[in-house]
Length: 117
Length: 112
Image (cartoon, rainbow over all chains, first blue to last red; front, side, top):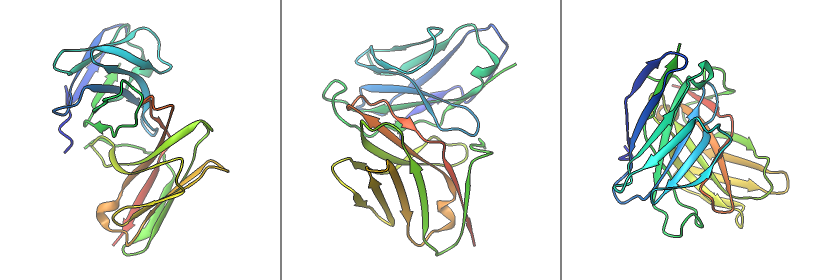
């Protein structure tokens, strides 16, 4: 186990609704990255938070937003849910001491399975 | 448990044999490469990494080979065990930005 926890484990929503997913990073880690993994595919980078600020974003629309809290835990919010948002959402934490300028092993949580009907 | 990769390419090997999983990457600026293992119901688990100034790195029972000329990465698993059965992903990163780009994955099935 990596020490990264996510909640909830599973979630079912309907189109147009909003959802908040939560991630607790491994102790001592200051960076959280979020990924979307559709069935049968590799994870796709959504965004990363470093010291409570967004530190990079993938090709996802603005209705995907996030937060990082002083304790380095994080939330992923998705507004106006679409059917294609159905996926496994993974968060990964790491310790970055150079503000995004170093390679750091990322530790993944078990994910939240979101189903949009 | 969670089902990952229902339609992924599959490699089936006999227990005790060596496994080789291949991956192609597209970003010539990538300079850090990682192999992950993902079991059903779990997130990806780090196996081994390699930086672009190396062409080979060995771990316990695993070896990663990097060919930057053809942008190809491979993972070799020695004496494959049933516990190695999982989906394997390669990922690359450029400019130390911590944004990992994952490949499509390969399902490894180990026959006893």
